[in-house]
Length: 313
Image 1 (spheres, rainbow, N blue to C red):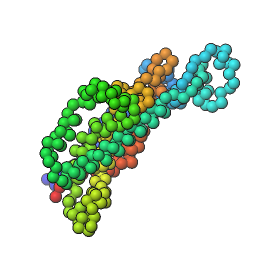
Image 2 (cartoon, rainbow, N blue to C red; image 1 turned 45 degrees about the vertical axis):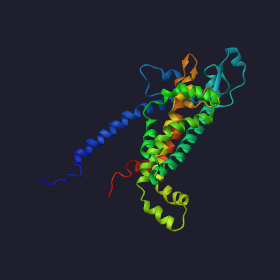
Image 3 (cartoon, rainbow, N blue to C red; image 1 turned 120 degrees about the vertical axis):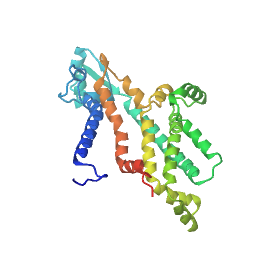
């Protein structure tokens, strides 16, 4: 009878688990890969049936995403001087000319301002509130924490009409400030509850030692608690950014021009004869990059944050 470990999985179990993980990764990544590939197709290739897996790559989708084009008559097109750039040539091949930039750059910048702005504000307010709930005797603490949590019990769109009327009265519709405050209000409950759990795991003795050494309460919070809570702050920031970055319903309802973000703008990209799917694929690909880069930069904190406090002495 061979000895075996009750904690160490067998080689067969490892192969089965690894195969399941690889299969799951392939299934979940397939739509993302298809979107990226669509951004490098031509419009005919993007709607071909059966779908083309092997195709000649083209930058037409990215050109269409960043430019506004107009179709002109063949005689007028022949009278134009030769194209000066490669993207002019791509547009000329479709019997069109570039008449100006598109609004994607502005919408993308709005997403950056609103997404990262609301994330920063949520983390600042959430950290302070979580520290207060964790360290001080707050009257009706449990009731307040439940009230904060209750704001996540219904979908945010359920209060869309009251918020729309309130924003219209306050002049916050279609403004960066209005969207930042709204996304902060939605994210603050998540930030408080996540960060309170992380701060609870930090021993109070660290702060007491700092206070004995002459630190003020705020100095102890800034120099002792914040460095220890960096893992939780990074993890919470990722979740808050993902919500604010991908939010669609409020962006459609409350913005139309000045503060409109990329999610409601990308589906409106119209090409000649219908939806310009390569431009949509290019827009989605570029839209994914900031959150992907942000998550990769903080991936170590994210993995530590998920398992923080899982093993207690």
